[in-house]
Length: 314
Image 1 (cartoon, rainbow, N blue to C red):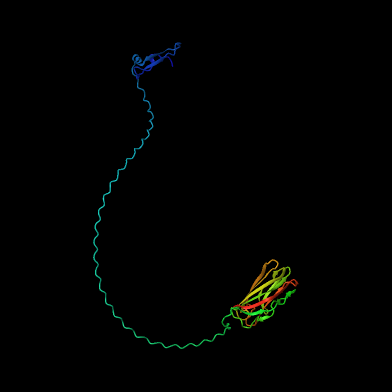
Image 2: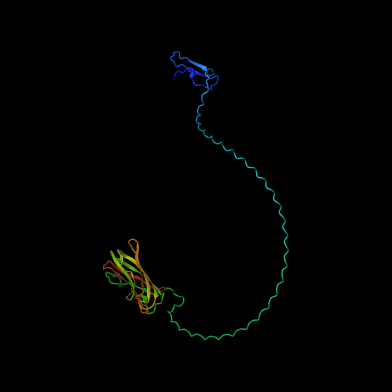
């Protein structure tokens, strides 16, 4: 700042009387003394004429708005007024008296009965129907539901070393035959027979139930092997389903062949079942036969029966 005479310092018109200002002497003065003088003294000595007014300063920016105050607390609700007392109930009115019942009316007189109609004439009697054919006679009481027809009384011939079909039945008492038209629907029969046989290794045996040349049941060839002096048994049941000529008559037969091996006690065997409704004929005589047929001529194969009983069971 250059050195200015005091007379050239700017006029100050707003100082306080007791304020002061410092004047520093920037000349080369080794003492560096700083002098002071009261502001009022300077204004008195150097008051000049007033200068022209300066231009107005620009307005300052507005200050930010203050934050809103907190909301006041809600006032408490006033208490409810008390309820008024209920009025008293009125008294009930009295019931009216019942009216008197009316008199019953008199009953009307009954009407007279009508006259009866005449009876119709009687119809003529119908003619009598023809008499039915007579059925087979039933046994007289006491009724024998099971009764014997035939019992074998000796061993049959032994069948061995052959492939020919051979009978297993021998002579006895009774009959194995039913005469022509001697069967009725439902007639049922049972055969129980047994015997002893031997069988070689890997053989076959075939059992047939027949009447004459007609086969009623056929087991087919059944595998059997290694049997020595074992007991066999055969049970067969028959029932007549229809009577008549071949193609009309029908019979069902069921057989079960079984044996017990003496070597180990095992029970083995086979069963067979056949319905013959094509070649069986009840209008001719029928004679029962049971046959056996081996599958080879081995001499190890042999069989015979020692029991044969035929019963009618219905």
